[in-house]
Image (cartoon, rainbow, N blue to C red):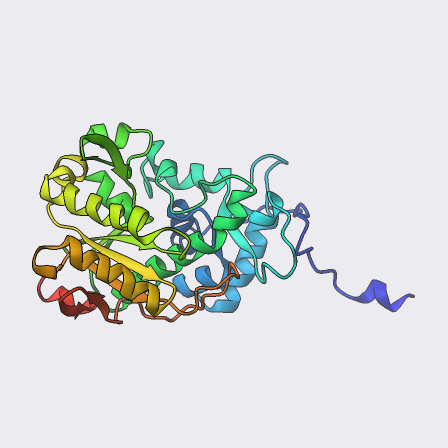
Length: 322
């Protein structure tokens, strides 16, 4: 007998193979995999392993089982991004997972997430289409990395973390009915516009907007206008009417120190007396051309985010104030 026939066959890493038996979905599948994927357009294996409460080997194996398991050719528990986009081998070193039809129907029916269209419309990342989706993948990956890291740290400290879904649940009905609920309307120089954060979350009572800067936009014409827009939605109480909140801190993740200093210098010209408590800045050096170039464990919640003219802000230290 050929020795090759005696070797156990491994399921393909690239192609689905229908399993003879379905899988029994557990609470940990829902809370560790499906729920975060309902909030993020795609998450890597390492991100889901870091987020979950099971042993890493169990989570990794479970991701494979859930991806292969299907009731028919059209509905699945999980998708992988390489099913939609052909990546060059050097760009992606691990799988990007996306929530499948079956998983989304399950968590909606169980009330884990609201059974409303705005849940998909506010998902972090993933709104671009190919080929721009490939270009934005590194950006979206870092946004999810920062938010997940902060959420994990808050959980470890028994702090109350609220996702954008939690914040929008309490927002006015008209906001949730909007096509893009996180596009916050603003009027600048008589012109109607909007500002849309890359992510929105809260720790205790303090709400944060996250902006990930790739260093490709003009500081004076784009970034400065974004800063002015954020200041306006707070000063004009737009966030009260749109989101039902009265305070907002905006966090900027910047690729290098030089660019951060230039942005803070621009803010100095905008802010009263050159000081601003509303904005925090952090250099994320690992942010490079690779979509999976950022490693878990950066502890964004415990690093100092610099502020213009004031002491740095550390998110976990704000709990006593919040």
